[in-house]
Length: 393
Image 1 (cartoon, helix red, strand yellow):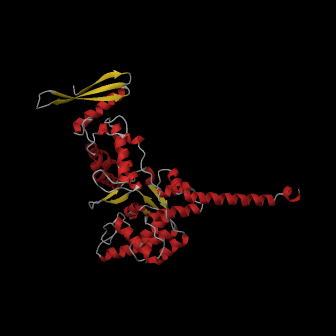
Image 2: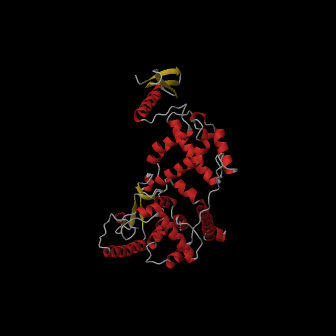
Image 3: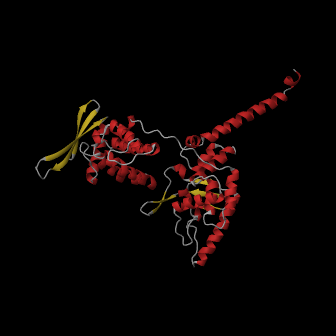
């Protein structure tokens, strides 16, 4: 028998795993794992552990260090389930920061005070091994990575509870959103060369609120000129190793249709005509599967190149410096100020919920509420002036 279950108490069971015979001693090896819950939950856990043994991913709970577990978490959970850039970020945090500082601690011995000391040391004097400190914002990213990793350890039965649950993460102020007003948007577009390869992508960023990764992944088959809309179904990621990956949206809300204005459709039509002329000069032909924004040979534009071109164009025009991602915030803020319902803006931006939209642009929503209150007062005063009872009473 490869494993069996022993009942210990009313809501506690022990799983006994048979790991074969130790060649050095000739004795049978066993691993005991405690499970709190029902017998059905213990049976489910037993099946998971046997699967891990079969696939070579089983880790002995009492002997696994945090470094060993985090490497397994990166391989088995992070890369298969998270966006490539997010996975890269977590991998960097773990290998450059967390493992050198906390990696030698056994997973089951990791306590909240270890994590709290890590945050305080990194935010003040630096890490125990002499590495530099962190900003509060970076510290929160470290906490998010640790909490997520340890939560998976709880689900996998490697630890009983998540020590990061009771730790106070570094406090970081939410960065203030920078946006342009209507004049600045128009000034930027008028001052930017329309023949530039970057003008259409800047235009679309301001008029749709699409993310940089979504813009770079658009194909001509995603542009519907008849119904004036764009289908957003994927994003492009450029990894540090140089690999380019196209990925489906991480949530169903990210897979969406975004309506375009007639002027935007006209801009895209003119852009495609220029693009087709360039491709013909190279002796090639375009298809609907080609990228909308690419080099003349069809190779994709790199995200860093686009952001650098945006920064350069903003400096040349002489406007307040905002990032390319702030074009997304500019689009959303302008629509809110025009009285567009937040639900519509949520759908255009691909937010997972309307609460995310309201939280992100609460500063704009507050101004809209104030205008609505003043408008209500004006309407009430007008009604009172027109009331016969009030007039002749």
